[in-house]
Length: 117
Length: 114
Image (cartoon, rainbow over all chains, first blue to last red; front, side, top):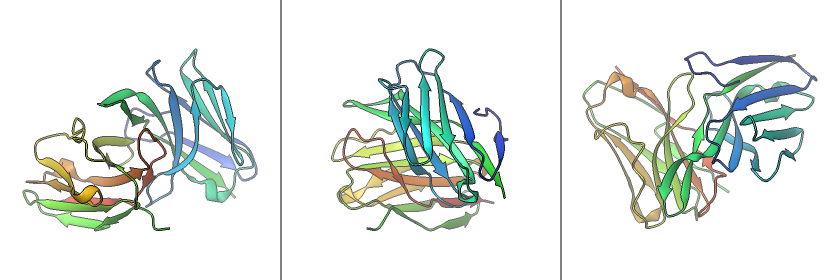
């Protein structure tokens, strides 16, 4: 899950196993959620998104699950590979309004995924 | 095509000096964002530009921080009288129009204030 301190939660997974990264979001009004992947020294990269009218969405080797009842989001990575090692951030759109219909993303603290070869 | 670029990649400055960080968004993207990422933390929203509209500056942490976007393209984030707590990675992102949350991030500028 997400961390509130300086130390990122870390998930260590054996290569080939499935990974599940969890995220608790705060605003029940959020209707759009995104997962980003950030490799060391790089900017975040979009992985997958989901709208609140869905509870599951699948991409290539990744699945996002949304449970609006408990405000929980998860990212599942199938057959985890060494290249999946990174920090994963969830983001929601319901907390910050910029006016003119624009809502900004609010990012969680991130979870570090380490893949053991 | 070319992604979002930022310069410099690293900046070391002395406390009290001013710094300018530059962002070149993806061509044609009307929305531009600045974020700050402290060590081991998530992304802290700073400012948002959308087309010719007035920017959303609500995330700027103090009046020492300001940003401009000239000609709807390149943006500069300026930090005046830098403090040690300003040390962080400053990330710029752009997206196609509004609303669009799929933001394309640059590699960031690592700022160290000594």
